[in-house]
Structure formats: structure tokens, C-alpha cells
Image 1 (cartoon, rainbow, N blue to C red):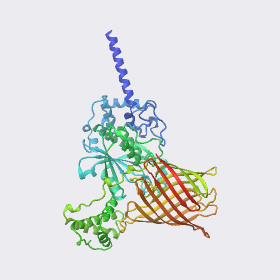
Image 2: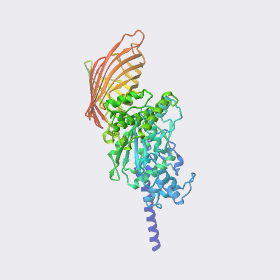
Image 3: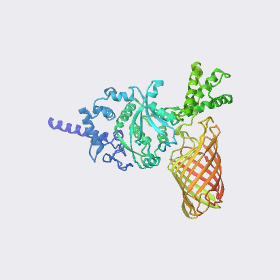
Image 4: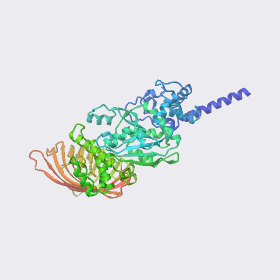
Length: 629
């Protein structure tokens, strides 16, 4: 009887253990460690939006098959768990010389937490500990503002950073970056096409943070925002060890969705019981990740502890320049064009240092834009040396010069959500119409919020359909729109605010009311902006347009225009311009004035109301109701 009882007890124990393993393999954390699609439930979602997933057998977005132990087509998560437990207990040595526990520290830490293997300590893996930096660390997500010089960076970029209590040495903290493997000197057109269609492999890489600081802040002149995470020690270790694991994995890269924001969000989801991004959304943007982080809790506490602002070299110079008096600016302007010492003797010593520091930042800013072999570069280097010698003579406390802090800035996540659906009612030529607009991402000149170039427009795939007189027609499809009206330039050489525009797509009736006339086009414009107020910018531009011939055989147009963009309140902006469009085709005599004004009302992250007036071929008034998601 005792033997039977023992056998039954053993069988029950085995059954309970098997049930426990099944529950763990179905758990959200385990499946997130495997980057499984549809993780977090017992059923796997096999509709993975990725090109020819090399690991589709495993239902994981990781394409490096060597990362997995299981070859099973069914019950992959459970089989991977059993094989992982066996490998940990064997403590086998991997091909790279690390033990299995040190190659898969996140898996090991998680399973140790469940009591299935012996406890895991960071000290047992010297390479891992060296990579993190020390046992005492925090974790931040760093956002680099959108950069219009690179299609892959239009919407900003994310980096995971390990923070240590080392003050000025924070630039030596390690960081994790995700990006495409792009050949040097890739053709820009090929670059865009392959980036949109998944033509590049991608992977995680690790570097000291100073490399990203140099590239983004000093060379590309992008502001950085550091979102410090509020995490328990357990979550910090699990997140850090998983980041270490995934450096050996590969992926397919897409500019619009399977990008840095998506894959860093997937790493963060290892410690969150809520998803940070929607897997099925056609556009996944860095701002969306930050918005989500500010909305959720991790382990019953707010996910964001603090937000730090790191201004770019251009921002530092311009904000210091803005603090100078008229006299001080004049001294700086006179000095730039001559080869002599900057004479500030007539100023108070503290103001002398303020001018000299501003001049030094200007030189550093300009040097990044100049050819190192040019005479101008050599001249600027000499001026830099002069300034360094002059500044040494002043006490260190004189160097204090206040520029705007995080509290003074508009935070990146404060704007609207990236995708737009807008329903518009309007009246044109004494006829009513309804227009429907779908814009996958991201913003226009009336959009509020930070983390982007102010008063600018950046979007892809902006579709507008019009219903009028019982007919549904294509009003426009903008494949790409970039328009920027920067402000805050000092007016010094190499620091003027250049306004520019690039737009391409197809639209109806550019200059005439010819029915059913849809022309493919490309528009480009260049000009200047004026004013230093953060709430108002005016501009003058000359715009050119080439298109497929309309019914009047017109193909080329030119339009000089002037306009402004102004912030009316915390929830409203206004933009207007006046242009004069003329056909430049041989023998063409056609020209037409264009007046356009639009305002956003009651704008927040989810909704706004748009009112616009357009006097061109006909007078048009529109009232639009927008939903952002």
C-alpha cells in the first residue's frame, strides 16, 4: 500500500511540475524573452508582419536560428523551455567560450526566479558585468529629435542607455542601439525603397554613449531627451541581461514599423505586463513608445522617473546668443568677419565671459559644417584658440550662463498621436463636398508638441478622397511631404535659417478646374525664415513644380510666396501664405494668385478641429474634425 501511495504521490508531483512548466512556457515574460509574436497568451498569433522570417518555424521575430535550441514546429515555447533548463543544468560551454548561463543570462535569471535553477548573480559573468558597467545601474531610454537629413530618422531615434553614478563620466556609459546594416555610399533612392520594403538586415549593437552623443548632438545637431525609467532592481537586471542576449540576433528592417522603436519596445515589454506598441500598426514611431511609457505602470509604479534634456551644439549656441544684449550681439557679429581678438573690454567681466562663451559655441558649431581642408576652417580654428586663451583668465564661476532647461521645453511625448483620420465638410464654387483624409504619420506645421522641428511638416502616404455631386474621387495622394520653417538663427555666417520643401505625389487640379484631371508631380522650394520668437515665424520662398501634363498640356510652374506660422495658444496654431503661381511652359500666359490660411483649434493628443480658407481656382472653406491614434 505504501508503494502504491508513493507511486501516486510521485505521479502527482510530476504532473504538478509538468503543469508548472506549461504555465511558465505560456507566460508573457517567457514568450517575450523569445520575441514571440502574439506572446502573452496560450495561442500564438502567426500573422507576423515580416519578410520571409527565417525563424517563422519558431513564431519569433528573431531571425537568428542559432539563438534557439528547439527545432520543433509545434509547441515551440514549451520545447524551448525544456531544452533551456537542460542546458542550464549541464552548464555547457557555448561556441563563443561563455557558459550557457552567461550566453542566456535573462532566461537563466527568470528561471532562477521561478526556482527551477540555481540563483543567478551578475558576478558569475564577467563579460556581462563589464558590458553593463557595474552592479549598480539605472536604465534610460534616450530620444534623438527627428532629423530631416536621413529618411530613416525623420521621426526620431531611440537608444537604451545604462546609467551609473559617475557624473561627468556618463558619456562612458554603455548603450544599446538598433539599426539597419546599410552599405557605405548607398544610393539614396535605393536606400528609401529598400528601407520601406524590408531590403536590409538589422541588428542590435553596443557602444559607449559618447559615440551617439557625438553623432546626434554635435554632428547632426539633434537635441537628446533622456527618459529615466523607474524600475525595481529585479526589472533592471532582467532588462539588462535580455539586452545582452539579443546582441547576437538578427532581424529584417523596415523604416516604418519594424524599426528601432519597435524592437526596443519589444525589449522593454519583457518587464511590462502591457504592450508598448501595437504590432499591427503600419507605423511604429519613437514618440509612440514614449507616450505609452508615460501612460502605463511597471510593477505598480510610474514607468518614468525623470526626463533630462541634452541640447544640441546648435541649440546651445542659439540659446546663449539669444541671452545677449543688442550691443553684445553687435560685438560678436563684427568679430566673426575679421582676424582679430574679440574685444569685450567695455563689458562687465561676467558679460565678457557670456560673450566669449557664446563665441566659442559658435565656432564649435560652425566647425562641424566646414571642410577641414578649407581656409575658412583654418581661420575658425585660430579663432577657437584665441577664445580658449581668453577664457582661461576668468574665474570658473563666471562661466555660468543660463539656457532653457527641461522645464522650459515642450516634451517630445506631449504632441498628438502619430496617425490621423480627418473628416472635412466644405464648400467650393457654390457646391458642398465631403473629404476624408488618412495620414499614417506624422505631423504638419499646425501640429503642437515637442520632439520635432517646429513649424514643419513630415508625412508619408497622406491620402485624401472627395465626395461631391454623388461621385467619389481622388483629391490627392502625397507620397512624401517635407516642409520646414526653422527659427532661432543668429544671422551669423553659417547660421541662417533656411526654409525648404519637398513634396511628391498625385493630386487633382493644381491650377485649373479641369474635371478629372489628376497629375503626378514633384514640388521643391527654398527660402528664408525671419524672426526669433518661438511662437511666430515668417518666411519667403520660391517654389517650383514639375508634373505630368494636364489637359492644357502644362507641365512646369513656379510660385513665389510669403507666409507665417504662429502659435495662438497651448491648443491652437495659425498658418497663412500668399503665393503667385505661373505656368512656365513655352507660350504659356496663365497665372493665378493663391491665398491659403488654416488654423487648428482645441488640439490635443487625440483630437483637433481644423478650419481653412483657400482662394485659388475657386474660393474654398473647410471645417475638419480630426482623430489621432
